Length: 94
Image: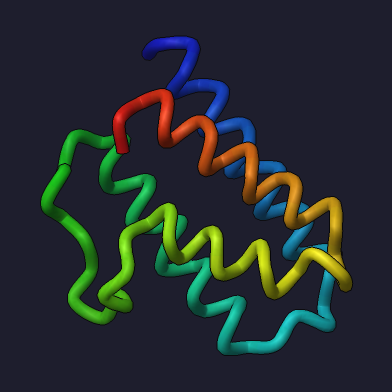
């Protein structure tokens, strides 16, 4: 496994921990992030076209950017983690 993939997995784990520690996140945004993280894991496992049937039409980075806008004021650390994920995906060509 490349360092880039491992770093992304570590950042996804951080995101999971931050979401667990923030019970005040609305269910709709939590669901959007859950689907997005599933899609990222599918891409990392080699399934470039394995996006879920229920996913929104936006790309993974677009969905993460939407979440950043949602969390910037209320959960700045979470927004920063999402930004790190976007950067990592960009470096990987996703």
